[in-house]
Image (cartoon, rainbow, N blue to C red):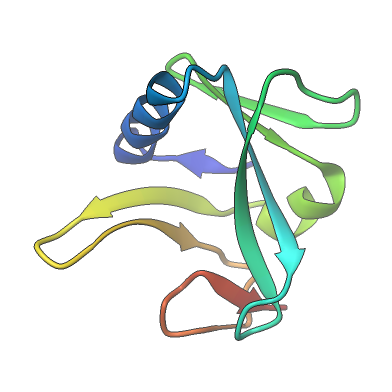
Length: 105
């Protein structure tokens, strides 16, 4: 299961509304300083094999390959004086870069 905090739900909802989109795809791609990077992409529909996460009306689609690396993760969003960013609290990550946007398993 992937947990999405209320703060992350609010930010994703705002992004979807501003871009007139229905849902987001959350996944991983090769790259980044630690080997794998988190990726968001706007989507209209889920695929048959996707895990669909719906929290308070916000939909996230996750493909099976990505889900095995993201299962158990907490997706949060944080706004500070210096930064506005999603935080990926991923128990599957053995190592991550300083910015927290890429990881290694």
